[in-house]
Image 1 (cartoon, rainbow, N blue to C red):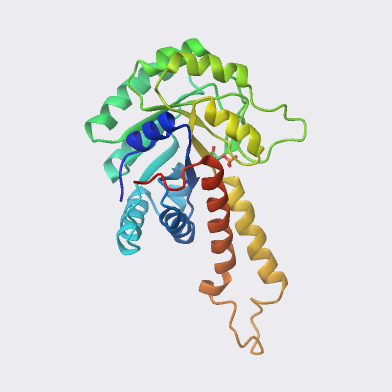
Image 2 (tube, rainbow, N blue to C red):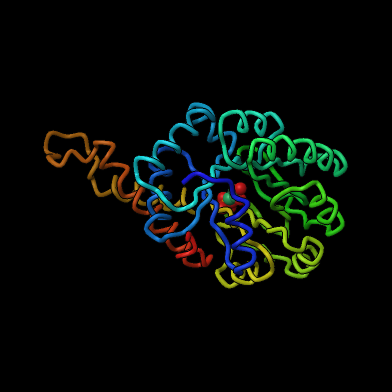
Amino acid sequence: MLVNATRMLKEAHEGHYAVGHFNINNLEWTKAILLTAQELNSPVILGVSEGAGKYMGGFKVVVAMVKALDECLGITVPVALHLDHGTEAGVRACIEAGFTSVMFDGSALPFEENLKKTAELVKLAHDKGLSFEAEIGSIGGTEDGVTGQGEVADPEQAAAMIKTGIDFLAAGIGNIHGIYPANWTGLHFDALAKIDEVTGDVPLVLHGGTGIPDEMIKKAISGGMSKINVNTECQLVFAEATIEYCKAGKADPTAENKAKGYDPRKLLKPGFEAIKAKVKEKMELFGSVGKAD
Ligand code: 13P
């Protein structure tokens, strides 16, 4: 059931659990995440970066695919289709295309400009019934070619940003996209406490969910993080499972390969199953299992 993410995140914030945001890249990814959410009776957010949207053929293709899979697979749990780290043009295009939720990432702009643009776009999104995420304090690492330094967000900026009417706020607390470097010093929980104090009942978003130790994730959730974004971990398990399958010779294009393991439906299956297992593990960790009612 396609919905915006406002209610599911409000409930998560009140109930002290988090909803997983999992980035999608293609049909296998989307199907794996939707089926796992349904099996676990969990709400879920499908994240689409602008690069992934382009890869899949455009935002309209993504909307058509997600809507059709949602219907044909009989998905009844709440599913939000969310633009991840959108530019202004991306936000406008996704509102038009039929997304149910958008993120405007103005964290690279001077703060006053980020605030002004966010206020303008939030109104546009709300007029069409979409939920809205904004960002302060850039997330470290590189995603879709955009590199952030991993700043820790300023509570004063958080307080100003929520006045724009946003539904949830991505606030950097030392989190980084991609694989964490060996010298990473961990999440800044003191900063999270200060941000949570001023943002009140507005759910917070933790980007860079890959590789954060489970205990830190749990502490972040009890500190107000209600949406946790995971991308790289699904990519890694998909790649590992596919490589293992190929190394075992199962995809060999020979006449002797009677199982015809090079058939894409067989070739992509181990990766599909690996994503399902990873999403299940995360939903259990985040505490969203059984929360779809
Ligand atoms: P990871 O790739 O580090 O899991 O981060 C995902 C993310 O934050 C998407 O916005």
